[in-house]
Image (cartoon, rainbow, N blue to C red; front, side, top):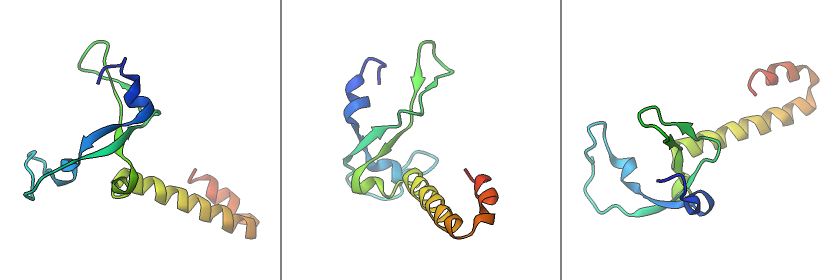
Amino acid sequence: MSADNGQARRQGLSFCEVLYFWDIAEKTFIDGAFIDRPAFLDASSPRKYPFADDAALCIADFSGDFGKRSPRNLCQRLIAEVRSQARVHCKRARPCRASVARYR
């Protein structure tokens, strides 16, 4: 995707769900038709692409119901849940504030 393609950054893009079914040799381990699913670009992830001049890379992830299966989205939800629970417990018992700060 070119850097001037602002539409993908604003509105998202479609990406093939085959990613969930590839092995490390880039062969699918199930047969079937794979469809495009909605995805989004993580605006906080752009990095300089080290193998080409004037290039960058950005993490994209599936969105919507299909995106709930994404390991990255699941991890982000679990981290938010733990932080939320830690805040609830800290309101009840003041001594835990220092230990919660370690996990932020």
